[in-house]
Length: 124
Image (tube, rainbow, N blue to C red; front, top):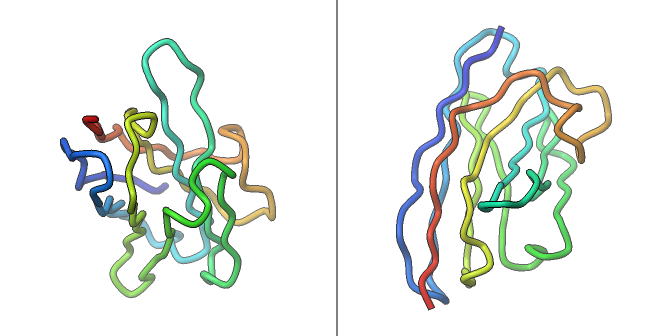
């Protein structure tokens, strides 16, 4: 069992930066892949970024590539999403997700454990 708690969301102007954190409990976290998803009002939850259990592989949605960076610190049981050059269209609730690394990362169904979400609002 893994429990996830996101933090770091907030209100930022376009062009600004935020760093989201995903604090995990549970011994299996170090064997888990981490994904970040987001959901804007009236839209489906969409993939943002993912990282393998070792941190050796990372994946990004085209819309955030070059602006967002996913990372993890297994010693701290924490995952991160550094978001730079934020745009108003990045406004959404951001969710951290995790599951034992099975080699697939891009779909919500790839993850069994989810955090409660943190709101990110980017003003123009």
